[in-house]
Length: 351
Image 1 (spheres, rainbow, N blue to C red):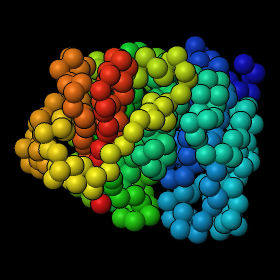
Image 2: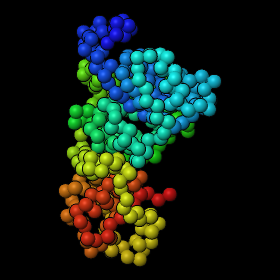
Image 3: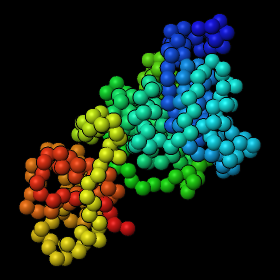
Image 4: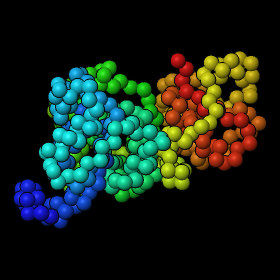
């Protein structure tokens, strides 16, 4: 490390928990940041300032005037320009000792594995469910830890997934339910800075192997009340066994691998009228969801499906059901892997 670098990080090196060894770890680290928006901006600024050696920035979006109240890395002059490119140029000025890989693309099932494999740690600052699940599943496939953050209105969440065999995003959120985003529900401008700073802190703890990362814990921060809550969650062996199995073999995210026949809700309703005895409906939601809103059939939560696969009748049409289709697809895929000789479908809630 050059003398100028050591002086630059001197206040950080003074910390007993960090020292020169910790700074060298940061210098050698390769971190991928998915999203250069509200969360990505503070994450990038603090990690660059801290001296992370190589940072990849994945974002295919352009700066919009509606971004400026919270994405403070950008100015009015940047409107219409690519976020990844603009962020890279400005951050290079902040710290010339950092190497940047600018990836002005959207993370997809086709490119995710090729992008993620070059990094030690992934930080998910995306703002949509498909990208979050894609990032999680790719990290599981390649055995990379992932720092997660999300924001909406006045509330933010932070956690760490797939860290040293710990829980993954799917353990906490197995089903991608529909939800609002900032464009629809709004967000207070200061919140991304607060949550993004926590995310950068988790990344530094993981890289330097200090403190206690938020693995198996979800931190929820309310900016209106200043209340901070922590919720513990465990690794789900059924979900993770499924993730690890084919994801590692094919280097494809689970959400993109499922290609099984879907039964439309309206078709199921017609079959209920003409031949209800030929349908074996399995609701794979949790029991409390089934009790609150049942469309019939039997209830076997997804976590219990692996041990119940042999009970599926081959002489009937097996239909797995959940609200969004994520859990029902997973159940149908598990059944198909057993060599099930009957007909099986997955189904989601009707429009």
